[in-house]
Amino acid sequence: MINKISFKKQFLLVEPVAKTPYPPLGLMKISSMLKQTNKDCFVFTQVGNGIPEGLHYPDSIYITSLFTWDIDKVINSARYYQNKFRDSKIIIGGIAASLLPDYVYSKTGIKPHVGLLESAESCFPDYTTTFDRKINYSISFTSRGCVRSCNFCHVKTLEPNFFVKHEWEKDINDSFPAITFWDNNWLASPNFASDCEKLEKLNKRVDFNQGLDDD
Ligand code: B12
Image (cartoon, rainbow, N blue to C red; front, side, top):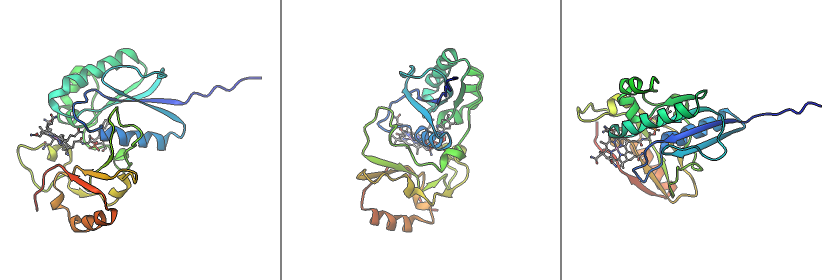
């Protein structure tokens, strides 16, 4: 009798630098996306360089980035995984890589994904993968982009079109008492008033820590 050996796909999500108390939201959405599209898979997470226990043959490695001043740590991380897993697909994305794609390519030979990742954008954050952070709040955006083009701000490069996210409630984890919103310019949203009504019904503490300006 021939034994059927089936390998579950393995994925690795890497946050090269963790300097803020917030977990990497982009990777949390990518985690949901991978779990939705690959029924039976293992999604491993790693902060900094290293190989989580049990990870042997990652199909793909997703490396995120945040602030541009930490871009060399992202490059260092990509090189580390290029050496460790020569057969895996390495994908670099997130904010710093979107702002410095040519630099990343020149140092790693990998063309980063620039801007939002459409396939992950509609996925809710996977709150089971919070990259060593203990959180008791949901993270969401009710809108993306900004109606302004201020020259000191990178949002127009990262999210060139302003649009409303109609289903932001999907990001909310019922068991958390609070929600943090990261809209770039929430007051410019035509849904601002209706969003406030929805929030009143949700009856949770709301933290809003980004720019507020009207249109
Ligand atoms: C929330 C936020 C913060 C939070 C921290 C966020 C965090 N993650 O820890 C706080 C409030 C602490 C903060 C602080 C600051 N911030 Co800030 N912040 C933001 C904001 C609004 C969102 C950043 C974020 O985390 N997004 C969550 C992301 C990554 O998830 P996501 O967007 O859903 O991810 C999508 C894509 O990025 C992509 N993706 C992400 N990862 C990956 C990986 C792969 C492989 C792929 C394919 C795709 C992919 O797919 C996802 C789905 O579409 C951005 C503006 C913006 N709109 O981007 C500014 C921004 C990053 N901040 C900025 C700045 C300047 C600051 C401050 C310096 C402000 C100040 N003067 O104090 C400080 C610095 C703090 C520090 N410690 O050094 C600048 C960065 C400039 C730069 N050169 O890097 C930005 C771009 C704003 C701007 N006006 O230009 N910030």
